[in-house]
Length: 86
Image (cartoon, rainbow, N blue to C red):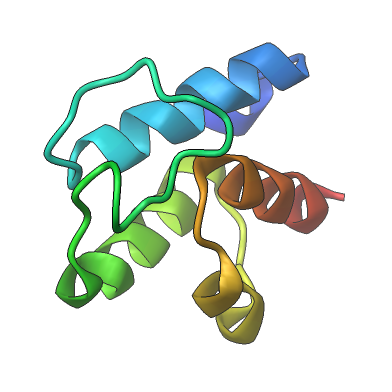
């Protein structure tokens, strides 16, 4: 069973994305919905590619690079993953 199959609702997706972000963030979850990935959670831009690849692997999706670059919050990452899963 894949990670995608294990996720059945928005809350599950939120938690899964937070786990992926936590691997690179300086702060552990829980994360506020509007928290900035870079300013508040301490992600460094040099880790963006690693985060992108980790999200793609975890959810078995291909994320649009241009849309990913515009994601600055966990909520925007969740929306991007949700969109890619459709």
